[in-house]
Length: 442
Image (cartoon, rainbow, N blue to C red; front, side, top):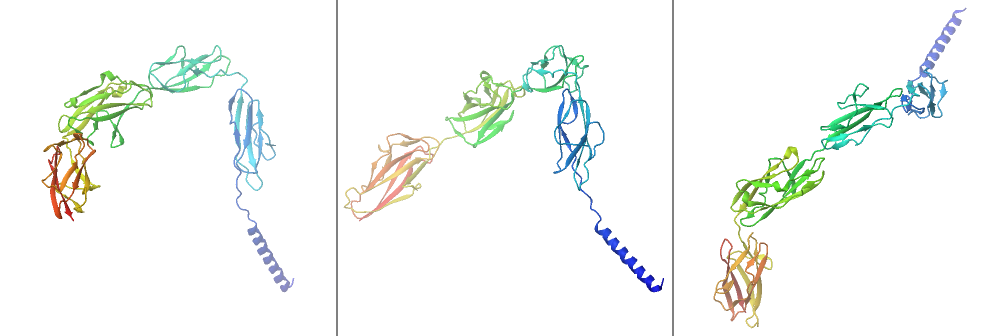
């Protein structure tokens, strides 16, 4: 071969090799996804009757293939189209396949179908839940001649466990597990049931500044937020809630209030005697202070709550000296002690002059009483230009928060400015209340 031909041949070989290498690089496959493993419903287990089993996979569009003889399934095995009936003990294996994806993992479920009848599961006379101490639990099975065995310590019952012959008495929180057994039959399924001892729980609450506050055992109910006036009464409302699971019983005849200042407290409304679980009742105590300052006592309420029998809480309240407080106003404007009110200008020829009504409000916490002076409650200094034409109501007292009124007429007898003092006496702790009035005659 001539040298020229050799060079041409070598060039062709290089070009062909480069082309084949590029093709190989372009067709290298990527890693394929795997079909999700099938699931069987119901799962394998021991059954006394035939089972209808459904197969499914979460991979959309995948086909499922299965075997029932324990052999490894392939895409050539039976295809799953309809639920499978398993009437004899069988090992089900299945895979899910889909074009372009890796086959799923193999599902394996074993179904043991026993032709031997099974003993009926035991049943109890009461469902799980709270019961009173001493409650009797009975166990029965509908399979005639079967024997029941049980445990109360959480262990799985067997034919070696305690044989049930008499009712089980519940005195503490208890879990009962039981099976029924009979020769030549499959043991029953296990019964598991739980009982707790029902207990009443007394919880005490007090509305403090409109907020419900719990008072713990041996704690104090602080009613200081509103003092009571000496010789006057204030109610203290106590709420008793049953937050337990059994009826709370209160011995109302045994409720006592003791301590240094116990005479200031008196039960005026007794609570209910029986409070169902989740319910509540109330107790009202009247507080009537006999001195200024703190009044301390201890409230005791007998109950059937073993952890709070009796309920014991401290009572704390405050007494104070009462006071009537005069607040004078005219048309909503307060007139202070030793203040002044101006009638303005009034024509001397005005037949009736000018009448102005004043309001006396008791902003204290005891009744306001007027003291009559010179046969009048409201008095003016000697000045014929001003006259009290309407005295306060004939009622001798003004309750806290209430008001009385009086009217003064200014009728000038001549031109010029006139001034006089108006005063009235009450039981206000500051004594007599005085203010001046003036007006101009025109």
